[in-house]
Length: 510
Ligand code: TRP
Figure 1 (tube, rainbow, N blue to C red):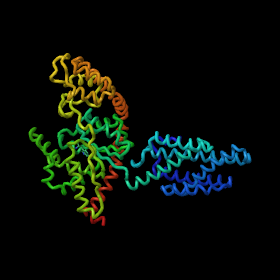
Figure 2: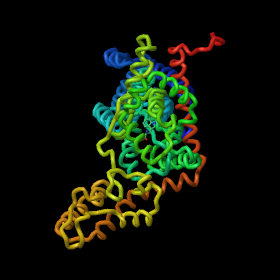
Figure 3: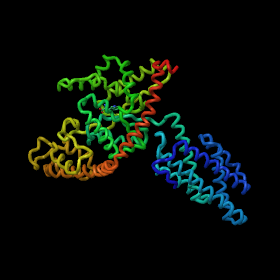
Figure 4: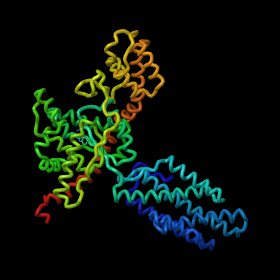
């Protein structure tokens, strides 16, 4: 394998190299064909089929011919009908071809796996292997050298992937996910269950942009700029620790993208005030603030517009968030449609985003409160050490109707069992604990000790990755820089279109 490492060549360079390899390979194939003086007209139909699927004609023809030649050669060799010199020469050409084929394959696979440009398909290795195996077996039954065939088919498949990828890049069939958090403290189990777990899966199939909304955090924490700044770093660490991959996804910070402020301002011109203050989530937050006698700034009240700007600036297709965020996504959809109608002249400047709410969106707090949240002090943080987790679990609320371990207990709605169901992979253990709990045959201590153990086992790999990144702070910062660079490019492009559509162009620029 050619090791392209974590720093692969640029997409442009890789493409040039692939094109170069193609022409070298095609030349060799032609030489080989000429040598063996055989014509394989019956293959024209198969070649045409491939071309119809979008493969370049030269490439398809060369490879199909090569495969047939290989088949013929094997037959020819087995029958001992060839001139020894011819076999030697054919072998030499094959060797050269194989070298080129392997190089081409490696570049193609590396390109696919490193997902340059964020829009590249992921080939699932298991599927790839299965397909290759099938091809190889078929080839073997026809008397063709298995290894050679496997490599060639892999190459053909990669060409297929390359074409698909190009199509994706131009038509953006791959949906873009945009979601974010407010950096106001470390992330906890509630974030893990409600968001991060599904983000890990989204990474495999979508282009993901993960936002750290530090401006939005200012709305509720105007006197704590240091907390916000530190939390930006802590959230990034938490993301890396749970296994989000900054090469596959883009991590970025709201305040690093000046276009965000610009679009927030413009969208707030479009959103009618009455509709805005009718937003039920905003309304209840405003009421909370009022009852706590917190000063409510214009910036805070405007945050739904700023959130719409987050989504529309990045042209997100899907927004995975909790149910409480639905009104904001609805407003985003509305303002996007209104913008397109008013300024788009039949063009979709903003794609209309869709909300995505997962199955488990909310985790109860340690105290049994409906929501685990920092402000309620009922959390277990992802960065907590095993002893902190153990102590927190020992303090958890359980069945309040149960006074003694010998009383029959309730499992339903009991936070400790809710957690067991979510975090303990040992289903037999959980079933046994539940059975004994309702009979009054197990104490809270045993149930909690087992929960603490399960939680710590789940958190261990997260802690390990966190420790690694804590020891390598440059990698944490690089993750933010790379993600922000990608997001910034999208933002610049979107704002160019928005300014143009809204006629906010400078006279000096024509
Ligand atoms: N308001 C979201 C929250 O508090 C965070 C957020 C900010 C967000 N910008 C976003 C979520 C854009 C989705 C999309 O959880």
